[in-house]
Length: 118
Image (cartoon, rainbow, N blue to C red):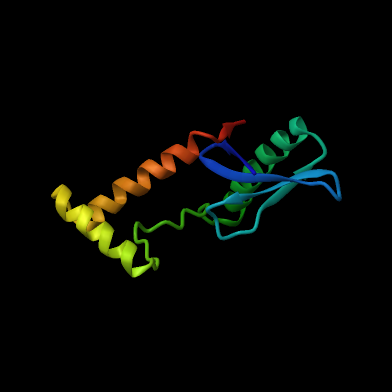
């Protein structure tokens, strides 16, 4: 699976060997906006068109394009991982939130660096 970015939006893309098409979906929005194409060049164009259409449609109906991130992240981890993370944060002199934010930022930056701008 690969990623693409355009106008601040990202999408994970994949290939369906049965239908012999590339396909993807805009990530990070509540609306389901997908796209597909037969070639890489067409896929890039389809992704850009999907993003542009999404933004245009939101403007036409008076809706702000989704930006659903509040800054609150809640998830469950193994209790042992929780304990190790809490200790690591304490030993670094930071709160668990500050420590986790830095760790998540580094991981996201590493993955987003792999995304291809189109």
